Amino acid sequence: MVQVKKEMKGTVRAVCISRERGTEKTPVGEAVFIENYGIEGDAHAGNWHRQVSLLSYDKVAAFNERGAMVSDGDFGENLVVEGIDFSALPVGTMFYTGDVALEMSQIGKECHSHCTIYRRMGECIMPREGVFAKVIKGGTVRPGDEIRAVFPERERPYTAAVITMSDKGARGEREDMSGPKAVKILEENGFVVEEQMVLPDEPELLKKELIRLADSRQISLIVTSGGTGFSLRDRTPEATMSVAERNAPGIAEAIRYESMKATKRAMLGRGVSVIRKRTLIVNLPGSPKAVKESLEAVIGILPHGLGVLRGTETECGRCEVSVQPAGKETLK
Image (cartoon, rainbow, N blue to C red):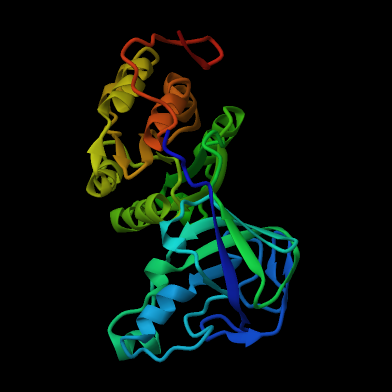
């Protein structure tokens, strides 16, 4: 039987902080990590998912062999760790060092303005090699401390993100009700909703967020509401298809089929359902009522599909799937 490696060990080579965002970080002798906040005195601390940044010492060393001449903290990283390749780990990995526990929340980040390292070398390794984490348990970390990376449990809850497409909602001229409705239904069915946002009906903005959520945050399910009709501004399906790697049309077909039982106008809906890497993206109509009807039509079967994507379930042709009245699925 093949033994699956469940954890990796490394050593903290440097702990760095900065007082202002957008500046290089400075090595310190120790740092205090605060639960659900970040590092005391660091500009990136706060109530969000990128509280702590980590970078592999081994990757920095290889970069320096090419003449980069960077020092600890120059990439804006909080922890420089030897012996762990962070970019090879999945989101949800836990890091333990001393009393501190961190949960990996994102891989890499978009480089909005090229730093001095990029201008000198023509590239910067932080956007592709660095990762971010949330502080789950606080404590003190010092250079020389051992750090363990523990892979996430296979049966962990699925994550979700909800994006509402609405020009008026994005401008604050109308309160978004469809997004909260989707969040409520997802949470009631065991999903952990990591992000919720309202965007104007601009395809490029949606494409950017879909790529970030699927690639960097590795969200299990992304649900969009709105922008699926015949209006010239309704471009959600086109933006979604542009980032797709595979099609999953049955979900969108099931939504339209069930919705047509309530109104024949449902046939005018153009929503699609697709896969990008291990993320499922599903377009929903824009009204709270339609969101409820659409999600209830498919929510019972989605966990099985997400399990196949994650690798925890198989596409068993001998299994009979039945959806119960409460929207729960059973396999026989």
